[in-house]
Image 1 (cartoon, rainbow, N blue to C red):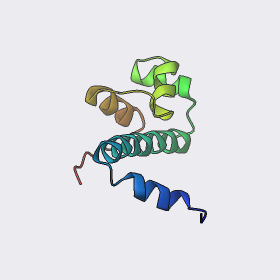
Image 2: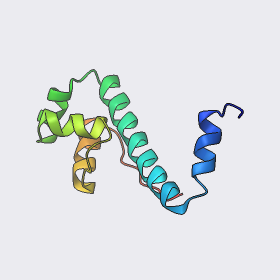
Image 3: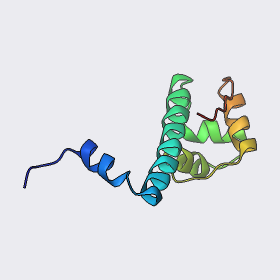
Image 4: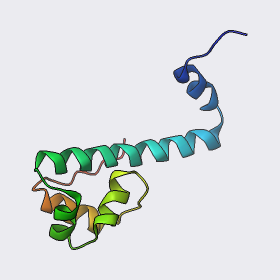
Length: 92
């Protein structure tokens, strides 16, 4: 049996609509996590400092950056404002 790459494995699994839906949901969440983390680091802020500016806890910021949280639009808007970045939402 030939060895498969992770990409080919994911492509094969993506033929299953339930897997594809869950994968796509998680991918969007991970993209958000990376964007928040990069913006926070570019602003030279710790998670605790950002949390203070946003009015939330360090643990809440950590959950967003780890892709574990499900932040509301309002929370995302406050994060963007604290980072002096525009909040952009798109459906592609």
